[in-house]
Length: 142
Picture 1 (cartoon, rainbow, N blue to C red):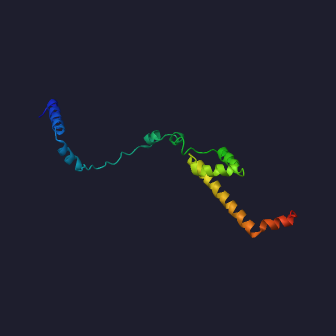
Picture 2: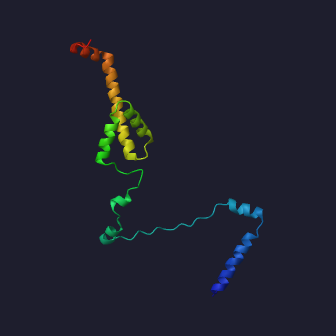
Picture 3: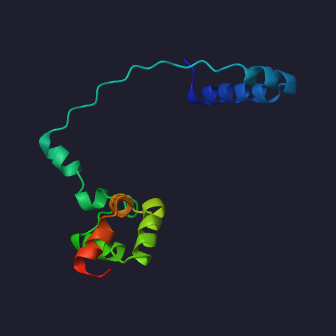
C-alpha cells in the first residue's frame, strides 16, 4: 500500500515526463481527441413541499432589470398619448418598435405601429375611392 507521499511523487514524475517531451510529440498527442468518460446521471432527489417553498424566490427578484421589466398601466396610457401625436409620436413609435431595450415596450410599439399602418392604408383606399371628396361636398365645404 502506497503512502500519500509516494502518490504525490508518482504524480510529480508523471508531470515531469510530460513536460520533457519534444514539441513534435506534443503536437501528435494534442491532435488526438481525448477519450470521454460516460457517466450515468442520477435522478435528482425529490424535494418536499417545505423545501420547495423555501427555495422559490419572490417574483420581483426573478424579473431581470432591463429587458423584461413590466410596464405599468400608466406607462401604457402615457405611451398611447405620445404615439397619438401626429408626426413626432409616429416617429417615436417607429423608433421604439425597432430599437427599444425593453421587450414589453418594443412589442407595444410594434402593435401601435401596426395600427398606424392599418389606418394609413384605410385612409389611402378611401381617398382613392373618392369618399373624402363626396363627404366634403355633402358638408358644403367644396
